[in-house]
Each structure stands twice: as C-alpha cells, then as structure tokens.
Image 1 (cartoon, rainbow, N blue to C red):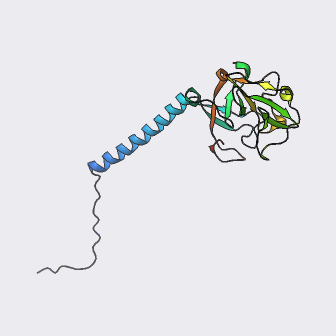
Image 2 (image 1 turned 90 degrees about the vertical axis):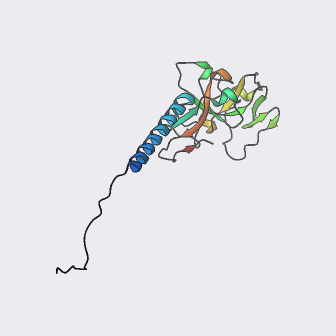
Image 3 (image 1 turned 135 degrees about the vertical axis):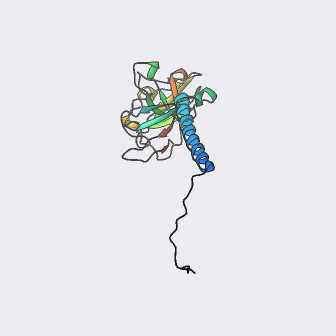
Amino acid sequence: MARRSKGLTFYEKKKRVSKDMVREILVTIFYCFAAVLLAFVLVFLVGMKISVIGVSMEPALYNGQEIFINRFIYKLFQPGRGDIIAFLPNGNQNSHYYLKRVVGLPGERIQIIGGYVYIDGELLDEGDTYDKISDPGIAENEVILGSDEYFVLGDNRNSSEDSRSGNIGPVKKETIAGKAWFHLSSEKEPMGFVD
C-alpha cells in the first residue's frame, strides 16, 4: 500500500480569463474612449485655445500662458463686470485676440479720475487689487458706452493697451470671442479656472 505524503504541495491554480472579465475590460476602454472623444468635441465646439500675449493681465494671466475660451456662454448671457474676455480690437480679423477684464457695462458712463475708475459718477470699488492708473487715456473725459459696448482694462493697468487707448476704445459685443475659462499650467502657476 502506497503511502500518501501530507506535506505542502505547490500546485498552482491556473487563472482563467472569463468572458465577463474581458467584457468588463472592453466596456471600461470604450467608456474612457467615449469620455475623451466627448471632451474633445465639447472643447472644439464650445471653446478655443489662445495664448496670452504680453504682461497686461498679470498677475491673473502670464505672457505665453495658454487659455481656453468659452465661445458659447455669451450666446446665452451678457458679459459681466469682472469677466475676462477675449476680443478682436475693432473686429480686426488680422489682429491677435486681446484678453482684458470687463469694467464698464452697456449704457454706463466711465471716467478715470485721479487714477481710479468711476462708473456713473461713483468710484468703482476694486480694493487694493490694481495699481493706480497713471494714464487715463480717452477715459480722462467721460466715456458713454452704447447698448452693445463694454469698457475693458488690463489687470496690470499701467502696462496695458485697452479701452483707454484711442485705437481700441469701447469693445463692441460682436467683436467678443468669449470668456476666459481655463488656463493651462505655466512656470508661475498650475492649471486651473480663470478668476
């Protein structure tokens, strides 16, 4: 009679790839591909990517930083005070897109007095966020905005070509490409939403 050893055995169970496991993997790959495709289509249809040119929007946006613009939002809503918008100055298709912050809204009276912005005769409360404006440009005299015009300024007020400049002036709604929405990372700042 043969005696059986009751010691350790090193039999390995072979793992089998089941049909359910393969199906689950394929479904996951499909959903990942669909999500990437949907994101690409949404950005392509609703957004566009532009680069910041110059230092006029520092510290919010930096020279060379890439920004996604939401082209769809202003089809539903009007630009609001504080929005950073992308526009073509005077609708010039041969120009690059400018990025500036909306300060004045349609129908308002804008004037820069003593380095500060006044809207309809009232001081615009911006706290200590921006530098005192050294050159009021055309806003030295009161600028009355039309029903489709916006007054924009760069955040770096003394290094910005904006609505104070005679060659730009108030920005018409039809020249606005959209709202700055998201910025990619740069040397100075990680990627994130634009304030």
